[in-house]
Length: 276
Image 1 (cartoon, rainbow, N blue to C red):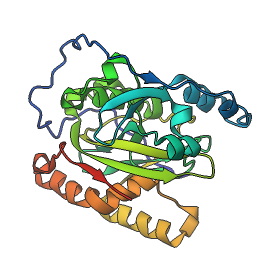
Image 2 (cartoon, rainbow, N blue to C red; image 1 turned 90 degrees about the vertical axis):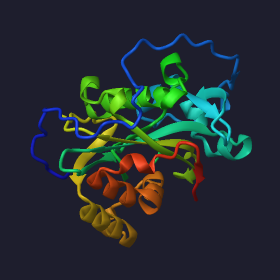
Image 3 (cartoon, one colour; image 1 turned 45 degrees about the horizontal axis):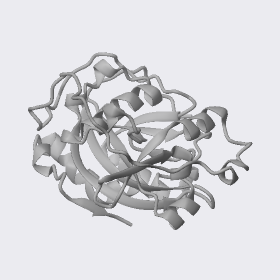
């Protein structure tokens, strides 16, 4: 395991969101439409006795948001069903997700290595936090991607122990959306419409071992070296497929904009990039 010096807990806002309307006002009352719920079949539950207890609970309790390829909400389903490749292929299940890229005041990017107990893509290195908004009122708010930003704040605490006050929702910058599909093994995989969120904060990190095996900050050159090692299969290092797609298509340009203070110019929340 990589060893790192203790993280400082001082919070410093380096970048302001390009959305001036964000504020800590109470969430508006939503009237949710009657949406499709897909029950979990008994057959699907039959052969997972080896699954980690925490991950199993999350797979069956968490309700992901089903969307079409234009990001319109069409229903909800368990995290379990949403990650079964059989259902992804046969029913074209597509769920909403997010990927957080957290930078410190030196503009270094925080990476995590997923825990060995993760059902999809265990032990791979990836961006700061990758997860799903859930089918709940506060995470279904579409305006200014507020529901996704609420979910990102929740999962940064769950996975990395970062308190909500250290990552205010109005400090996340939604930059764009991608749609991708990636098998993990013969049974599990991902089919996600993924919101890409940047945030620049100095934070304290206390990883949850059920979710995260390791963490490290990298600069652009260090990330390029990690990519080379992953491509060469060195040290058994692997990158998550969504992270690699973002690295190859967007990350270094956006990272350069962080340095230059021109990140708001890159925001494009109208386009959904279909990547393979």
